[in-house]
Image 1 (cartoon, one colour):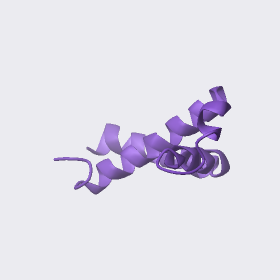
Image 2: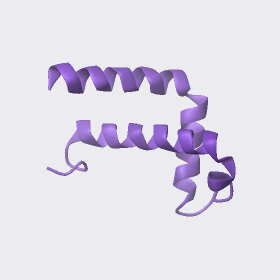
Image 3: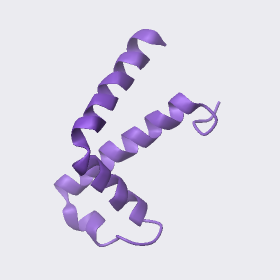
Image 4: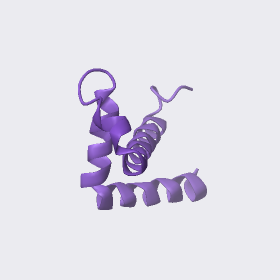
Length: 72
């Protein structure tokens, strides 16, 4: 089943995208800052969400990891 049709997989993909974009922006900020609009602006927005909501994103990552490791 694809990640689009499985809600838990979709949340996992979105959460990993947010974490990856925030990490890339931390390492190489110019890479994402030059693409603030258009299709590649999605990655910039994900990086901003990861930076500003980092405690909530971290809690979601821990909950997701526990759920995948122990409940699935």
